Length: 452
Ligand SMILES: Nc1ncnc2c1ncn2[C@@H]1O[C@H](COP(=O)(O)OP(=O)(O)OP(=O)(O)O)[C@@H](O)[C@H]1O
Image (cartoon, rainbow, N blue to C red):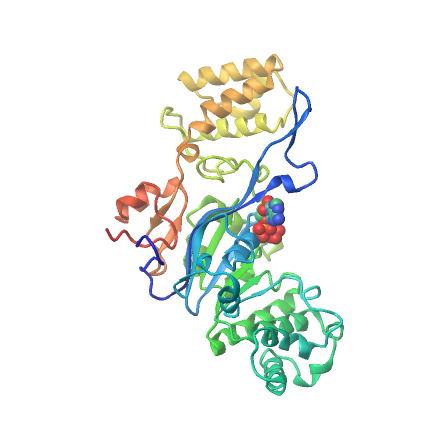
């Protein structure tokens, strides 16, 4: 990668995002970050940033749709807005058509923005109710000095037709349209300035399921006709599956997996992606419907876990090398550690807890001694001490806690790259003869192969 200028590995990339970070100052909220002090003036502030996007890299090729999926609050919208420079990045870079957006400001940035449009979730609030849809569609053209009045009207009518609306409705107000139709008006408005790239932030989430597919189909047709590239954000995997060519999975400010769509859905490599896929409702009621997603809450982006951010909820946390427990015993230790952390039970009797959580698979050796110590603390009502032992000596010693995972593995179902930020994939990455940099934790989606 060259020192200045975009990475040169992928000539097809329209957008190249590198190590992008966006932190919010948490002190802006009322009393947020306020801590009590022992000394006068009793109250002090601690600067604790919300790490909404934390080191994200990926490419989007010209003409493709990259789906971005993840639970609410994982940073999808922040990522999208930071990519478009609607939010100022904390660090990292975004190259659009080979140009560093961070180097642009003022008029050149404004001109560039014409090529990068955004569509939001709520078609209701993103349309001015006092304006007729014709002028709404014309507004961006006007702002960028495109065409004369007559030309803009003709183009607006043409676009209304292209997005599946009646051009005769040019003079109607937004309230006369349904939700799906309003989102089509938004599409026409975004298209009016002839962009190359559209960020679609949950564009169909507010629509009825029956309408969603129709709008998605129109978006696909428009992509073909206008040579568009999409970054498509959704929390609904069926929507992502419908529209995407490749899919990126986000968790707590990080990308955890990125692969071609079929590959990701058929051959997920990250336990978080597996959990998301398992949680897709199953239509057959006899199969039990939606499976349980994941235990535990999403940790705070102010103080995210070290190493793999998913490790505190991961059902496959890796056993520290210093122990040699059978797998089911290790799973019991993890289950118990998490239950103690959540204060999930009131029982304090060590034998009762051994029976409840270990059911015969109790660790021996050093691990057994540590467990006995923790159980002793619980018996004496010293919960913090018990949690400290279990967390520091078991969970925090896992490679998942000590090292940032980043691997590229072979794709089973496509020729494309498959990025998975999970240490379980280390052996696969080695087998796939990924370069040494990947094993140092340097592999990132979108990062070029080492060229030095
Ligand atoms: N202006 C802000 N100030 C402080 N924190 C913020 C701000 N905007 C977002 N956040 C926080 O950043 C994190 C990511 O939020 P973001 O809205 O990007 O997530 P999301 O995945 O798009 O969620 P959703 O699907 O609910 O919109 C959240 O913890 C959110 O509370």
